[in-house]
Length: 77
Image 1 (cartoon, rainbow, N blue to C red):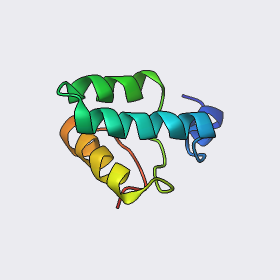
Image 2: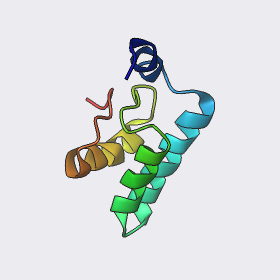
Image 3: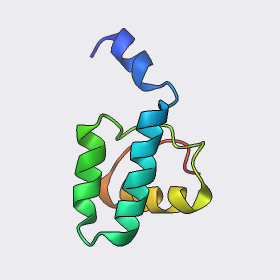
Image 4: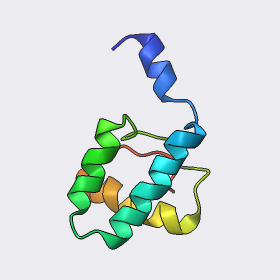
């Protein structure tokens, strides 16, 4: 992966990407198949997204995905 691509991935998520992260947190909270939510974030290129601007309740759900599925989500602590 080029340096340019790596630098693009470190930026704050766009409003659309942030919406996907919120939806993923809700899906993880209410959907039994949470591995599908982890797969969704990977497919959308958000497996290592910066989640620091999200609400604490959503961060809590995304921590579960990070810990259980090895997603390198950032800004959750």
